[in-house]
Image 1 (tube, rainbow, N blue to C red):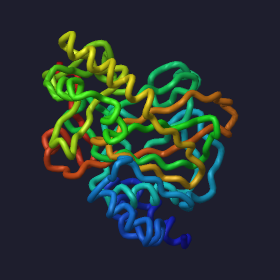
Image 2 (cartoon, one colour):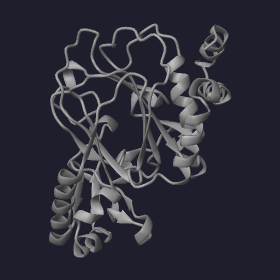
Image 3 (cartoon, rainbow, N blue to C red):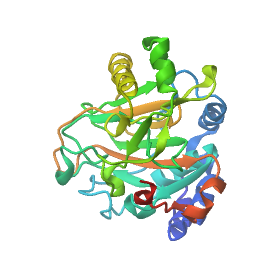
Image 4 (cartoon, rainbow, N blue to C red):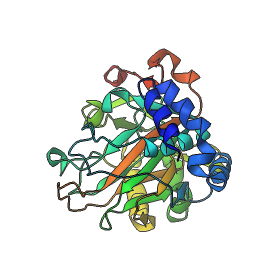
Length: 307
């Protein structure tokens, strides 16, 4: 990438809208025509896997992994351009105010205070399968994870609705279609995970040939005995049908958040500057539905008020 491109993008860092525009303008340069075509095809049909892996992307020089997601690193913005060029190709990049102050590019690194917690900065526990922000009325359609530094012991785990349906009987699918489930708020949003919010909703919705899935293994609860039994069956299907993917530097994983749940295996963080480092972005298909709860590209919904 020419230095002038990085310099121009750096100048746009003070303005999220300008930075998104800068990334979109150089999409073919930083991603390549074949990657753009793959993203276009994925937006039309995510396929049975509900996810897309692009490899060999240029993320620039990667400095030491920061100790916290918000620590300044002094790196250039090459990886941010790559991530947001892909995000803009799929739709509209957004942030959520409770997470990293609403940043549209977030650093995911292990932290000492989160080793055993159910957050993206944990390392010592399985990060349970979940739809990203399953509790949120404006949850993203796509989740993008760009690997700057990998760890061979850390697997991203995936399970799409197409993976799971063969392992679920008709009665379970029918129960999961009922509006009998509620979901608590992730602690990263300042919520109380044990307190479900919003009205009861189904876990599975849509046409039989295009089912969508919204579920969090840690936070979704059933309102009836039948609903709770269906959640047990779903969790068992995920355990049996899950796929594992080890991300390496330059890998970009795109997850269709309506068709595929994801998690992460435990790994041993060293906290010495060599730990796993991902960057994350969220994409909605349309900004209009969140207009009343949004400041620019930052979604500001008060999830506590959803109880």
